[in-house]
Image (cartoon, rainbow, N blue to C red; front, top):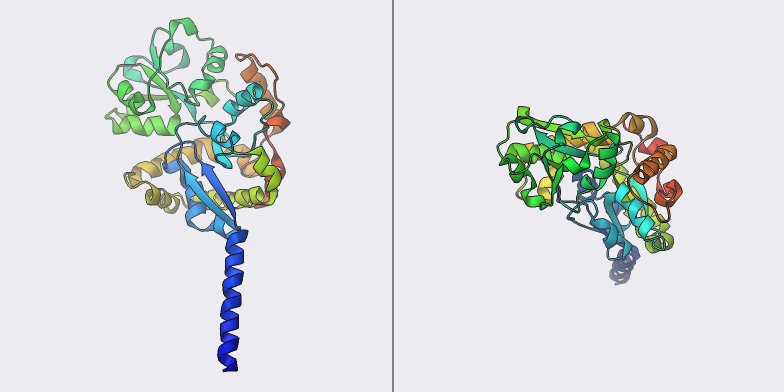
Length: 338
């Protein structure tokens, strides 16, 4: 009898502890910048592997509609954390100085912003855009850098016709020759063009980072009220995310399978190619290999803000410290790639 009572008491205690632990979990809604494609593998790897759960976090991840999309979603508090273009965040902070939203982890050390054209349509270099039609979705992160790209490459902007196109028709329009080039993320537009029947040898990818723009790319941003109230949860989220990136770099083929779990129309070979492009061109850079994942060189970030100011009139120009907060990052040794 005593044994049964003891067992019942232990079970009840375990249930209470379990319930208490569940109640103690911090809930986080995360807004991604885009659909679940290859480059999202690090986040989805951390999610599927249970790294967030192990940190005491109850994370929900949702897709987005472009690299600007998450900024208002996170600023409003609808989502606590998200992924967005850090350069668009700089402009947002200028326009909304009372909303001190900051980046806390850089995803793309080198941005994937690109002009993607077709050689058969006469576009292989920046100056080739003069006299051509450029298809650009208004909320596209790459298009947001257009004026700075124009200045850096001495392009006559008046000689380029800009056609506002939707994301779904961007690559099909270029494949059909209805535009001569498009703005986009290099790995997405390149793969999508091939899927639309354009031969690889006919595709020209003009990376803005190779043509005068010293910018960072997408970053993880956090709602300021949430960060102030839950600093340990933000640190835990970043720790888990770092593990997802480290796993992905170590074994991209395994990591991309996590994308397929959340995108049942994705093709493994296509998403692996997309992921590998992002790793090679945007994530695993010399700066990251030296300093670790997620951080920034504040002097470089300052230069990038200045460069944005070359073609954008700031009302209240933010500083690098206004944009990036490194206090949530793990030690550099824990962010290194092997």
